[in-house]
Length: 144
Image (cartoon, rainbow, N blue to C red; front, side, top):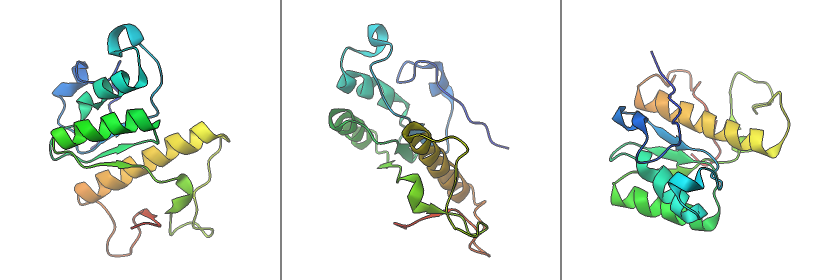
């Protein structure tokens, strides 16, 4: 069984921090909930990075440079391996003749969100021993 748990506001004060995750993900950050999370993208990134856990891999969508720096800084502090999700075009699926992934919805944000979701699923499969290593049927990226 698996549960995908989305945070409320997100970050270090979120109630979901009681969960022991297999992998964490951070989607595209914006200037939301500034009355609670901070007035700048860097402050918001710092708060959102509160979901990162020691020894638990994390994947983030591409972020503005200042936000990415804060996420990486927090990841180092808590000994978390944080990586940026590669573009969706870098993922392949052996069962598809074209090898690539296609989305039903067009648009950059859908591509970014899907890339994060595929990266999280791939990491979950690897960490839980569910990747199909016999047939090579796991999702792969061009960089691995």
